[in-house]
Image (tube, rainbow, N blue to C red; front, side, top):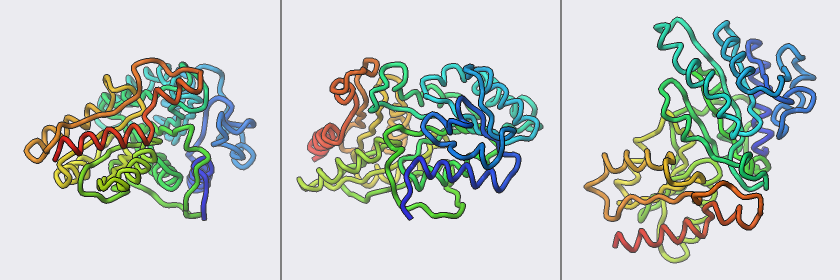
Length: 326
């Protein structure tokens, strides 16, 4: 049946807590309030306050507590209310959770999931609307996922909870109310596997999270002018499915990588390097990237929309690349 992105996340949490009593949820307002966006609604009533714990307003402190609990055998899901606050989580997650399994020669496992909403579009302004995923992709030992739809969100979150490594699970605020077919039972989607969500032959367009939907819209617009676009949804950013990317670009010989985050230092640069290193002789046009404007996200709704790529921007850039190719 069809379920929203938000309800799929809630269902994944509920099913995993039912299956494994080591799974616990901690964060600000995750209990009685049901989470900042409602992802943990009903969990405290079902599983009690010892497994669904409201934390004080100190992301550094309670994410550190989550790391400690994971070391002692729990499987902890930590909700950070906005991804902008992930800067406060960087010490316990990047300096400790990512490194202790290596430093202990595998004697320590840290199965922790950090759930957090990213992205603009809700009028939340500069300090609550960023796309900071690139900040967490340069640390070995961390896995990062950014699913684009409800079906993948549920399957990836279940996989993340069962994984023995720290996983950062980025949700986009604009996806919460979007619905698609989601099975009732438990299922997993592997971390590290991208999806080709539209077949094409003229150009590859790569996106993730909310940008996947906009890439698909752009592909429809391109079809109307006779350009066949293949669209890849990365789903998982680390591990990265380089095989799917390389195979697609080798087929189409042209590529556009789309992020909501500004281009400078964005994850799109890493993808571009993979393509340059593996597809150079097949390319018929330069590797191209499209990202947000190089300014903080504005509160003003008109400026906010202007700052981030939409389907028309993606279509126009892809059309330009296609004409360079031919």
